[in-house]
Length: 201
Image (tube, rainbow, N blue to C red; front, side, top):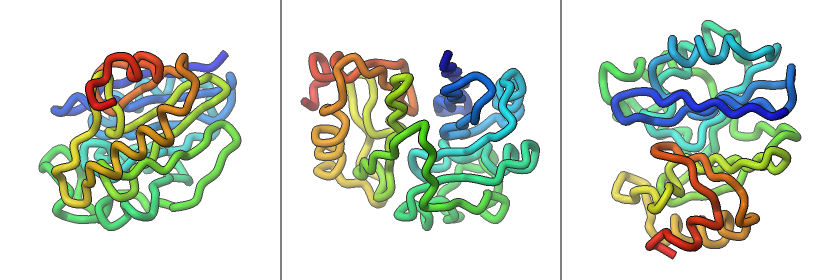
């Protein structure tokens, strides 16, 4: 049985997700944004010899606990789309003291593939924004691209409203209506519900 655990962290109440598709299998830690000790406590409940960090994008509130998790858990693989790499390591991408200095963040890779999920390129909130689609569960982790009843902001550097709406319309809204959506902030929703109530579509 697949497990999804939500750990809401930080001043901006960002949703970090722990996802295990099969018991005893890999544990995916999606967007560990802050409060690493709380995330570690949740991770330690899982029987998971291999742990992987996935970032939907590079904003500080989604990456802040990553360095500590890498050190404490010995994580080898961290994935971030290469278009957000500069943002990820930028000293300006910070809200002290809520994230560690840029040099303490882990090395990230632009091409990590696992059979458990599909990476969907969804730029707009940031140039390298992605969503992770776990078809077997099913579950879509949309980061700050799609929210319950709303969409991500595009007024940050690198944001683009046209790209964001196109990403959602052409890549996310084509998924089955009953697909649960787990966003970077706020409550979970579904593709079908967003088609019905989201004012942007």
